[in-house]
Image (tube, rainbow, N blue to C red; front, side, top):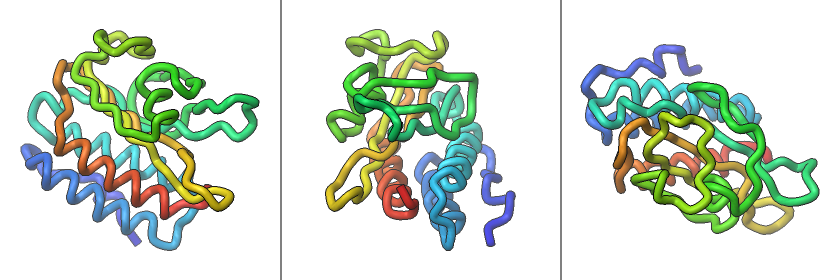
Length: 180
């Protein structure tokens, strides 16, 4: 059993160490728990607290969370899932904005300046950079996007290859740890 202290991070920890802790704690939290709501809720909290412990610009993350595939929609779209931060857009169509492009293309979108991203959806005007990682799982015998990790930063150039690598590892862990 993982304790609430799992989301305690030492102030000034390196980004690599914070992600290592996120991945280890997520693995522990997901053990024997396949419910995606539980797992995404805990992962959102882990990410939020990790970012808040880091030096700038990472500590300027103003939103971290998930959008999940909306199974009731006629056309592919994402619906708001567990998150930390200000209220957010509730529905995002595949192909629209950073999240929709990541979902449709099944590729990570690392955006250093959201104003330069065609069709960016400004849920929070404070967001300046963003990273979105698709979560892919086996569904009906094929690999499909079931959710995305979305993290926004109030600074330009808030994310780098370290974020991309580690968030992709988290996405892989989540994809195989939940019943979608």
